[in-house]
Amino acid sequence: MTSRTTTEGPAAGTFAPRPGAAPMARMIAAQTALETRLLLRNGEQLLLTMVIPALLLVLFATVDIVDLPATGGGRAVDFLAPGVLALAVLSTAFTGQAIATGFERRYGVLKRLGASPLPRRALMAAKTGAVLVTEILQIALLTAVALGLGWSPRGNPLTVLLLLALGTAAFSGLGLLMAGTLRAEATLAAANLVFLLLLVGGGVVVPLERFPEAAQPVLALLPITALSDGLRAVLAHGSAVPWGDVGLLAGWAVLGLGAAARFFRWE
Amino acid sequence: MRNEPVVQARNLVKRYGTTTALDGLGLSVAAGTVTAVLGPNGAGKTTAVEICEGYRRPDAGTVRVLGLDPVADAAALRPRIGVMLQSGGVYPTARAGEMLRHTARLHAHPLDTAMLTERLGLGGCGRTPYRRLSGGQQQRLALAMAVVGRPELVFLDEPTAGLDPQARHATWDLLRELRADGVTAVLTTHFMDEAEQLADEVVIVDGGRAVAQGSPEELCRGGAEDTLRFTGRPGLDLTTLLTALPDGSAAAETAPGSYRVAGQVDPQLLATVASWCAQHGVLPDRIAVERRTLEDVFLELTGKELRS
Image (tube, rainbow over all chains, first blue to last red; front, side, top):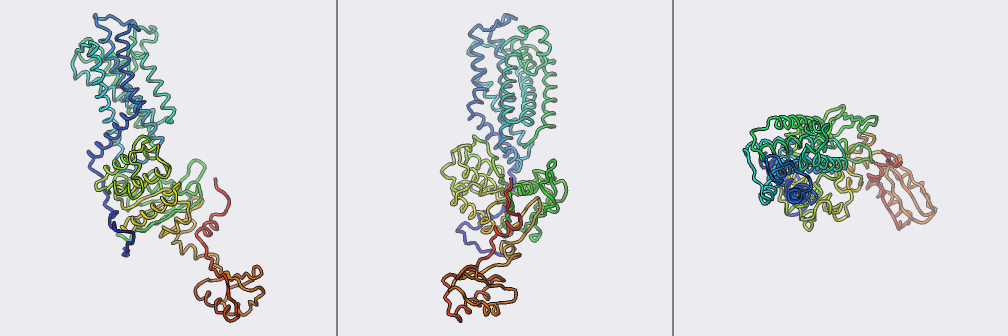
């Protein structure tokens, strides 16, 4: 190299190359923290993930809007709380993640991160981390509200965690599939529409038995139905592992994550 | 090791459907230099840079960046390069300072973000969300993000597009310092003065090919000749001037009292004209050397019709 004289001021050597990626754990932690902060800062996301589930819980538990089944003599909140927890997972892992990721793709955020030291699988790990942190906050809030309304949960907490984890995996796959293939505006519209349809048709607040008999077998195959039904079996009735729901969620997870991995376009 | 080109691209071809974005482009960038890729819209500048960054694979041709394959060796290459996209790349709701600090955290030995923020005049908008920054502030944030990881090589796609003159100069100063500290830079630009001021090497790209490459001086020197103009009293007899000038030069009165000398314009030629004026009692009230600018060269090579 030829020698150079620097005349640009006192800071010579400041920019001397010293490249290197941060340790993987630090990168994932930083990315998770950033994505969680952005998520919690976003008003629409909070409305979707916190306010709507909490409102539905309070509203349906205190006002007799839908004639809830008196199975096992349970109160409304015992029926509603598991459904609303399923809705919380849907809102964060599917709707929120799909919309956020769709716009990140649109605004070139994913493209720019692709040129950073952060590998793509680390980005995915961070996104999962942000979803999990949000879900923990949601579950804490909704559990507190439900307990305030007189909820008395039963069942094995580990089974509940298994269902929540599988539900998160299934909805994340489907959300990322949508975000990675559709335009951002289409994702925004479709993710909200799907949220609304699944809220009504997936046994969240309206029992499946209220729908026409012909529709019930189809609705029963939806991931939201499997999650709310499974959570309800454990939390309301103290059932052991509901293998049918677990299997259905696992199937959706494999399908959704597989399709997302195959079809996701980063730009 | 240091003599190997930092970027070496050969015969790059890239097609999108029926359009050919790159048609045999070659690019060679020496370590520690600033290379400006200059070209009209649609010339293939961004495609070429994005192939070097590993965003896309060429349909034909080879590319090596820091001796690595940008796609196959991406994991090894990415920490060593800095990238500034033409636009976007930041979460709309992330704050400027937050985003720069985050980018720094992805690197092992980042620059001091406060220093960088101050240097690029972003100190006042550290808490402003990206979407509320002005276009120029967004550009400067993207530049800061490209250099914060102390890369060996930076790719900057139109780094000064949309900047006001002060911000352009701040960007140029930063780039000069990067070069002084041994960082190699490849930038695309529309601005001739930017290439002239900043670049050690200019690559003029048109129709997906490199139509000329060299230092700004080399590019301006080649091809058409320079001219020298002077004014004096009308009707001077130029015969004796022509004999004094080297072979191949020309002299003419282009308008009454306005004279034009064409040829290899160098200090010797200027001295010859001045002494001829002195011999003939002419005091030129204006004497000017007109050299080809990079813009002249650019327009000669790429034509003057407007591009889409």
